[in-house]
Every structure is written in C-alpha cells, then in structure tokens.
Length: 300
Image (cartoon, rainbow, N blue to C red; front, side, top):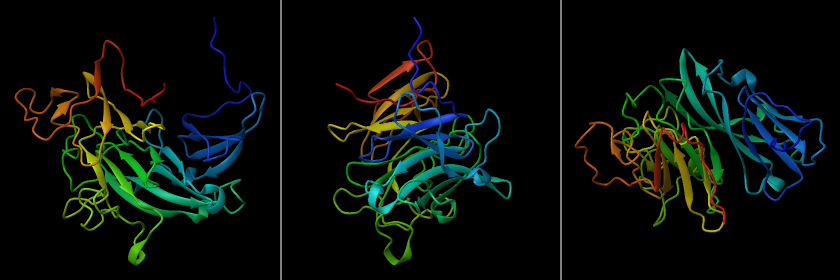
C-alpha cells in the first residue's frame, strides 16, 4: 500500500524544514537548503508556492554538502512585529561561517525583506558539516540556537567541550533586548545562562572567557530538536560519530559528553574516560537500527 502524500501538487528543492508561523494554521513555510524559503496555503489541493525569502547569494551550498540555509524561527509576536530568524552557512575569504540573522517583513507577513538582515551571531567553523542550524523560541520567549561541533571527524578542535567556543553547543539569547547597542541580551538571574556575566562571543564564535550564549554543551550535531508542548522540556537528537545515536533531554548547564563520549560510551579516550559532570543520554541506539538521528517530538 502506498503512503498518502500531503500536498501532492507541490515539489521543493532540498527541503530541510517545514513549519507554521505562531497562531497561523493557514500557511506552511518550507526551508530549501539552497537559500530559499517558500510559503504555500494549507489546502490539500494547493498547486503553487511563493517565495517568502531568497538569500541564495549569501548562502554557501555545494552538492552533497550539509551546509546551506538550515533553520527558520518566527518571533512569537510575528503577526504584529514581522520578525523572523534564520541560520545559514556562509563563506568569506575562504573560511566558512555559521550565521544567525534576523529579517523583517515589509508587507504584513507575506514576505521577508532580504535587505533587512540584522546579523546576530557569526561563528567561524572549519568544515562544511556538523552545522546544527535549527532555531526555535522556547516557552520562556528566548531564542534557542543549536550548533554542531564545526565538522571534521571526531571533533578535531575539541569544540564540544570548550566553553570558550560556541560550536557544539545549545545557545540561548534574548532577541527582544539590545543593551548598549549589543545585538541581543544574555538571559541572567537564577535561571540564566551559566556564563551570563561574560563578554559575548558573537563576532566569530570564540571568547577569552566562557561564552555567555551557552545554555548547554558537549553536543556533536544537534541537527533537529523540539520542545515538549505540554511540559516545555527540550529534547534533542544528537547525531553520532560511527557507533551510537543519542537522544538527550537538554537542561541549563548540562554537559552531554561529546567528544569525551559518544552516547554513553567512551570516545576519547576509547576506554577509561572520565564521566564526572557528564549527563547520560535518555536513550541511544547502535547503527544496526539506523544512522544520523533527526530529532523528534513527544506525543501522547
């Protein structure tokens, strides 16, 4: 028996995400890796889609690459303020960068103006894989950004465990406040980010102190993740190196082990690794079951 196809009248080029704007079930938005976001009416018989944002000229994407336009998140008040956020890979001067930017709508949410870009984060990276790239607003109204370890096998620069690098982390920032002209505020207080008082690492993704944008660390490639709509808990699938895929419950200040461990197993060193301060995955599975875990949702 064939699987029913949703919206059979539409086709897309390398789609990597599909979502709706807050409080608006009338439209769907599809992120294409080449650098285009398309929108179409939520009607089963729909036969056409429209361009919502086109930034192909800024996006680095080559055939079979993990790089490209990777994430989209709408501000919770998108209907009134027209603000949306994207993550994409860019190339400048021969080096690659993970860019997180804000765009605004000039026409009541019909499109985003490509010339309205306000860059929030620029993170230098060494390869075109392990980008992460998903963005989402949490129940706390803050923007969460998942970044991979920057690529290359085995995290060669040990980014996952380095709190002075943004790579290999789950970040959390406040885009509704720009103190002193900064591109965003850092959540502070009792529930704030672990290194909230330190200088921002937004220029190139590195700092001389632990980066205040970090919410949790020790991740290899949190490509897709979601918040439980009932409890607000953040669940992430973290893609493994060669043996184990893992599912993590991401909490403030948590260290999920990469590249000391892959799943719940020693990786570097391969035996006798220290597990002090590391959080075990909620679940893991080996390669006999599947490859490259791609997020998921809690449902009841």
